[in-house]
Length: 258
Image 1 (cartoon, rainbow, N blue to C red):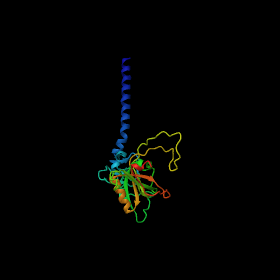
Image 2: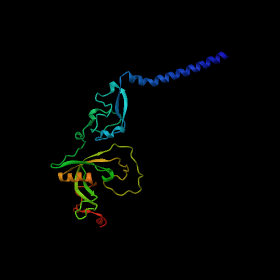
Image 3: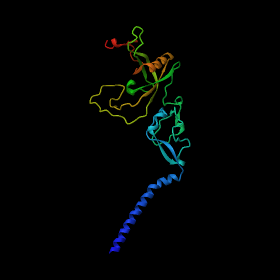
Image 4: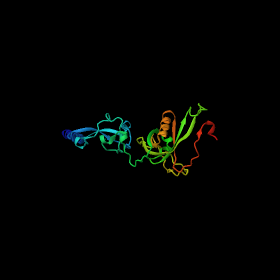
């Protein structure tokens, strides 16, 4: 009787050991398969990266994975160490290897549906937060008004006065580059939304990050925009070509309530 119990216990132990060996072998099968194919570490896109995204902003959207050498593109990148200053030439999708030709100098970036710059004008780019860009809802081809605010020095007779003026009107927006998207924050949909013709009132996704905006302007207006970006503040309105023009006006404190 005792011998049979010992034999049964031994059989159970052997079964458990065998099961553990099978599981261990199965878990290592994939690794052995990869190792047999000369594995290579490469950067793989984990979350979508919009076209125009700077390399410096990509690290959170990439991961290093070990792939069989035969499955790795010849130009696949192992790191971003030698890609500083470049941007994504196209939108990058999750799962794809990051290859060198996907990164280009900003000047080489070609945006789908790019807007033709009218003869005689030049392009200038500046950066703003979404609340200064009609909630981030502007797109290439829109026309915008450029408001400039200065803390002091704009008026010769009121050197310390804060001022705001719609300085450049009906400017052609040629490109809008956005920061990489993250999980959107959704606000509760109000029971009664105002009638906003230019936007879907059900769209409650909050824009994330700053926007790079490029406009086509004259050399004089380009200088005004650059000065404002350096020493003042800029705010944009969406200003279609048929928008009413009430004439230039400089707003100061004593004129806000008039």
